Length: 62
Image (tube, rainbow, N blue to C red):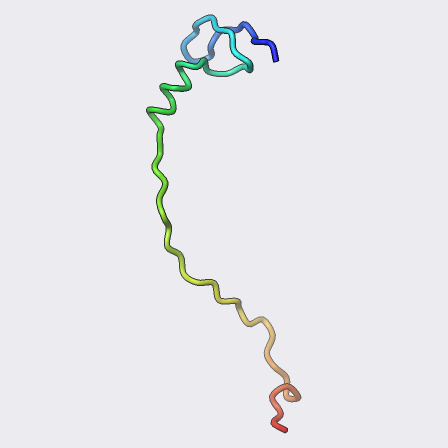
């Protein structure tokens, strides 16, 4: 892809980038400002819900 010439929508600087959006320096600033850290989330083990009640034939002892 050829670089496009446009004005950065964030800092209004004339730039040449592959696609329209914030320039390289603005993207680096945004990554530094809004960097998030991953975390482990503990959840309860899945237990399927019993939607059907057993009928008399299934409960019958042999």
